[in-house]
Amino acid sequence: MDVVKEVKLLKYQMSLMKRMINAEEHPFFMFAIDHEFEENQVKAFLNILGVFSCRIKGEDISVFYQNEQLFSQFALSLDNVYAPTPPTLEELKMYVTKIFYQEFELEYLLCSLKKQCIQMEVCDFFLQRLKADLK
Image (cartoon, rainbow, N blue to C red):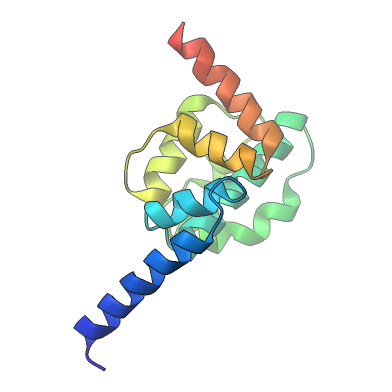
């Protein structure tokens, strides 16, 4: 099969999968499909959220040091990622831009993660800061 046919087939299969996925149950997965995220992007971002969770709670983040290669492919400063201070909204925005190479509504991303029960405390932490910035 030539490349053009393969791409058309994959696009058709993706459209079928989008119809099968319940967007209410898996809003982040739908978000990832709609924005054409790659596996390494999703992994890096979810690991960043894990580091943020530890930083917010003041917990040990050494378990995440194994992700250095994953983070380095996006040119993320490991000193900043593993900083001992709580993360900031600006830091989150920077990582989103570096990992996903595109802009989208940050609130929608955070809400889709929260609805899918992915790092809910981290999502609440940043959603509160987003609301405070709007005031």
